[in-house]
Length: 457
Image 1 (tube, helix red, strand yellow):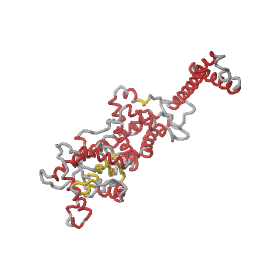
Image 2: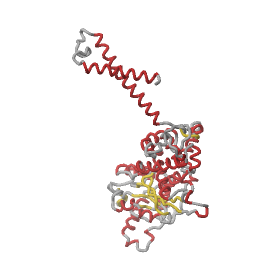
Image 3: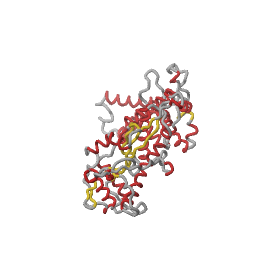
Image 4: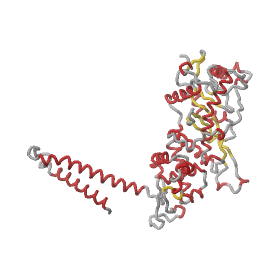
């Protein structure tokens, strides 16, 4: 036992002995039964003794806590230890804080961001947030003896770089089995325990979202941009014998984002063969909006005596709906319709940035080499991390280069183009709402309108 431990132990024993004497002899306790007039020295010593007792207890607690913490955060294990599991799949070599990548990472912050898509302070914050969940659920007979930093580092390295498991195993000096476990564990923890980070805003939060859009565009009651992206999946390496036998699929991912590119809603897992509108109609988002459970919980605003409900803007093959506004087709140059389209396109940039930022994660950058449900978990985990980074104002994974944005051909299908527009009450209502908003649309190069004049009570 070192000198620090002995000192703490002795001070703790002395304090406990004093407390025991007070309890055994309460009536003859000189600090309580003798008048201070007769024993001024003893009374003057009481605060000092009290301070000593408190300090010794605190010191003992801190020392024991630090010892416990050090035992929990063991960063390497002795391969010859009798407590080590004999299964070679879970053998651990000696490692630094992040295995072999440790020495290079902390000398170069850019390299740290490249490997983990976040800065060091965000990593520490995230590690503290996830540690209780990352440190559990090891195999009962073969605990990994890995710190939370290493577990998180392995999972983030896979998501950030897209590296395969042999590379991860070499970098962190762990087995491939442990690498796969840590990646799966991180995705499961994020998608299960922290999915609220991509939950749809509450009523008050949605008002704040629409206020930000109005400040940006001058258009009231816009609550988000909806867009559908597709990610290619080729199956896991073990499922493919060669390139010719790879079965390529696409996963459709529907997102709703705000003006800061924060994800408000995400639905992943639909087949990429479905159209954008088919994915929307199959989602709970569509069903909840149609039932009046999400949008239109506030009083509508009025423009030219037209009630303007809460709505999304969208592009792709979405139809025109009262709560989903798409651009005009072939607008007249210089018209209100063209101004609306300009504003609409400017707003949709946030969705393009979000999708590009998701693809900036290495595991999503090219085809996803994983089973279907694992690929969906990757998309969900990267989406949650995307929102966490925005909240932290850490833009390490954020794509802000226009050349990186991926935009689809806009093949609009508008209800107003149908011959029975006058007979379609939903399409007619949506047409009137969009026309009213077009009168308030500002040109992209103009100045934001005064929010106070954007709607009449």
